[in-house]
Image 1 (spheres, rainbow, N blue to C red):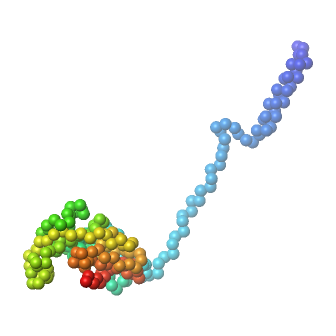
Image 2 (image 1 turned 180 degrees about the vertical axis):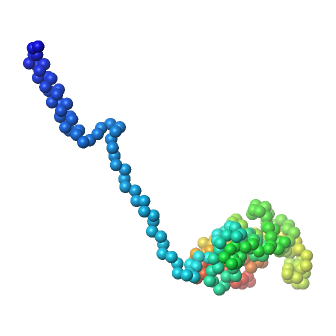
Image 3 (image 1 turned 180 degrees about the horizontal axis):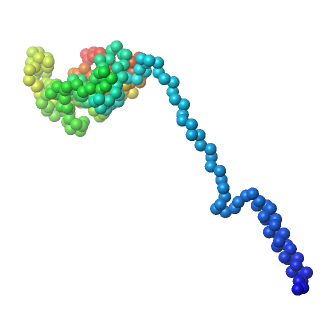
Length: 231
């Protein structure tokens, strides 16, 4: 069969083009079948920190956070000679009226609570400054401020000593704002963690209560501070 010269040249050009495309794409797959190697993943575990020397309990405060630990869970009896192995949790200004846990024989244990436990209102909004209150022994600290039932001086026995009363003395609610100056807005539980040296007054003179606390920076825990001069 006779093929025209022009048609033969066109056929040769097409074949040469296909061959060139095959050479250019050699070794590089196209389309959805492109094979890309995934990045290498280091499966080695992170290095472990060096172990503490025996007896080293670190510098953390012994009382964990603002929520009480679960009784029966492990604790560490820190070597701090000023720590009595107890931690408190709650709003009451009287430490014995809050929830107290103690670290004994390596586990947290609950202490038995007196009848005053849980006497503070659940929230700051339930307290109305100036409103009458039934027991002048009650004092409570919240994020919004610290409040106490303050008795009238004329209603106190034995020259105004509230501790001399045998029955609850009524009074009126009085509140003091948070101290500011970097202090936590709510009275810190004794023994809880703190960072730097500071003294925080939660209304000692206004409320007539011993509510001044200091951060012991060496032990990194909150302790009771001296009552201020209110004159």
